[in-house]
Length: 294
Image (cartoon, rainbow, N blue to C red; front, side, top):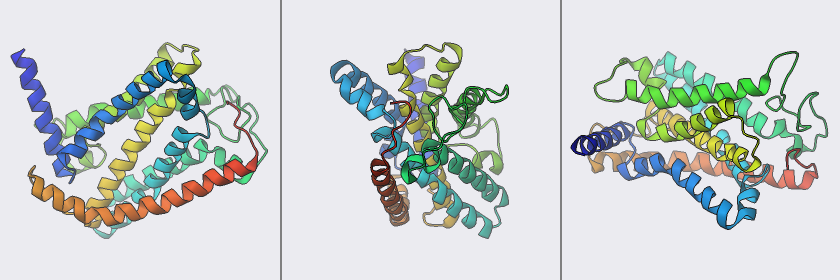
């Protein structure tokens, strides 16, 4: 029992210290850490108590999928803004990493909304798409290439990296040292978000149970992943742009100052992306094209 208590205290201290290094208050870090599990619990309760709400929230073109799109849209500008700021400071590796992330997320955002198929009213679809939509991640097989399985493997790999690297790079003492490792490693408090998507994708790959209710949970797993990416890229942007000073201690004062300095820029991005997402939702409702997996 003493050993378990000691590990809990150490883990808590490491998480808070690492979050403070990123200018994130301890309370916000703990919210970020537990949120993926809280979400799973909420959906579990909904499935038992209000099953109609469970299916409504997780159905395509409903609340959870639009939240995914919103988070992906947030990630693109903050990653690009961070890349520009990093380039100005001659942090070339950071700039290149952020550009790669922005391009990857742009692709994911396009896939999430079938490249605007229902936003702009395109009736076309790609041959072999099992949902009759204009995307490639729902193609089971294309000339012998299992595209959908590759997408699942890629998500599982990202989840594994997001779980393992923080404990090799950000845990004190670090096993992997150097500025480059730090750049490509998310904060410790985001590991649970990557863990959820890793767990779901591992289950789907190893034990592909054909249970619709369970399959829909992938929507929450993707919210966790995209939320972690948006948070992580925002923190890098704020650090590279100088909109917040890197907190040098775990004291609440320094973190609070960093948070106040960063808030206006972050809120501006959220507001613009929020408006764009609302426009996309309205256009989708008006298009009359129904998703293929309702």
